Structure formats: C-alpha cells, structure tokens
Image 1 (cartoon, helix red, strand yellow):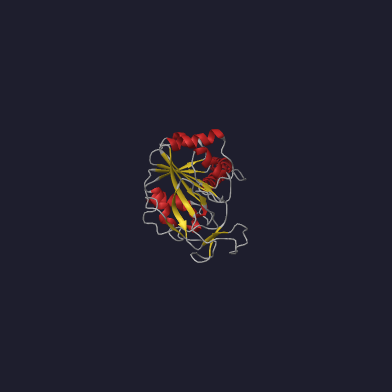
Image 2 (cartoon, rainbow, N blue to C red; image 1 turned 90 degrees about the vertical axis):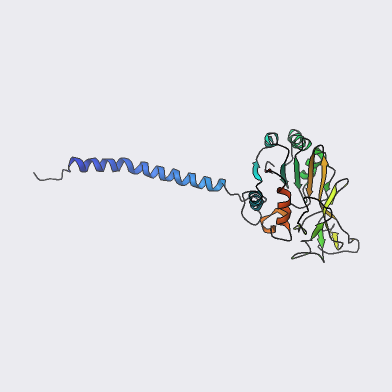
Length: 270
C-alpha cells in the first residue's frame, strides 16, 4: 500500500529524539552554569583578594605558600581561628574594611595568646589598629603617607625599606618596597624594616618635601610578642599585591614570613 505512514522503527526514533532533545538541552545549560560558578569561585575581583590574579590581588601569596609547603586556608569567618592549630600557623589580616566585633577580636586574641602568629597590614584605615589594640599589641599604624626622594622605586611614593634587625623574617631579604604606604609607631615592638634617612612623612599630602617635614628613618614593619604568640605589623598591605610582588625583595619577604609555618590563614572575613 502507498501513503505517508512511517515504519514503527522510524516512529520510535522520532519520538525518542523528541523526548531527548529538551533534556539534553537542559543538561547542557546546567553544565554551563555550574562551570561558570566554579570559575567564579576560583577567582575574585576584590582588591587584596587571595583569588584575585589581577594586579590588585594577592594570589601570589598563595603561590608562595605552595612553594614553601605552607597550606593556605581561606578564613571567611573568624571561627576559623578557633579551628586552627596556633603553633606554626600565621594569619594574614590585610586592610580590613569592616570592624571586628568584640567576640571576633577575642577569637583572634586567643589564637595569638595560644602561640599563633598574626600579621596585620594596614595603611590609612582604622580597623587594623582597632584589632591590634584588642589583641594586645603595642604597635600602631600612623596613617601618615611616607615618601622618599632618594631611595625610591618608580616615584617617591615607592620608598625602599631595609632590614633593621636580624630576624628570621628578614633573612635573605635585602629590602621591601611599599606602594603609597604609611609608617608605624613601634612603641615596644621591634622594627624589622625601616625607611631610609631620606624619607619623610608627607603630613599635608601635597607630595612635596616642605620645610616643616623632617628627613629621617621610619619603621614600616614591626614584630612583637603577645602572650605565647607573635604580632607582625606592616604599614602597607600593597607590599603583598601581585603588582608589587617582584618590586625590591617583596617576594622574598613573603617567603620569609611563610616558610617557618605549616599553614597560612588568609583572613578575608572583614
């Protein structure tokens, strides 16, 4: 007989294709979304973010951690301090943009008193100093711009700082270079790196050496003991930026900080 009837096998294939197509399309769309989310989870665009590979990120710190067999731990909540083993663990707190609550500050303080090491890198904000006060450290970041017309990088806003003390954190580090950074009121803390005798505090921020501004050395990195632990203060978080990694001996400084520790806690909670 003639006509337009299809064989049973052909009808089965056509119905199967009609059933499969929307499902294959749905699975493909879900796969694309998942891959996009995974890629986003592995990167970040935030300044100083540990997963930001751009110039203003700190992904190089994680690379140094891998190279020194120091396990990087991302702390999105201060409770991570309570789960960390204080001995041979260093925590990085870099220019927090939000204050730590009393409970959160005490969690960090307990970590330090139990033998942990905390590095607070701050320049012009107040939350880093508030945390230092709560932890029991003496050093404070002044929030005054440091410049150097003689010992500098690409401009006076990139002053060179050299080791002031023999310490494991200065070993094999010829010097570091901040980027529009500040200085530290060391108090009873030990200066590890200081600016040159040609540096000055640009208090009015006119980017010029005025008659009232004095040329002298200033601490830019300090270290002190608090309880059984250690607090390091760096007057410019930019030292750890990807763009500054190869400036002066910034990379060697990161290695010197991480090498003695088994883990580095990258505190991005604030």
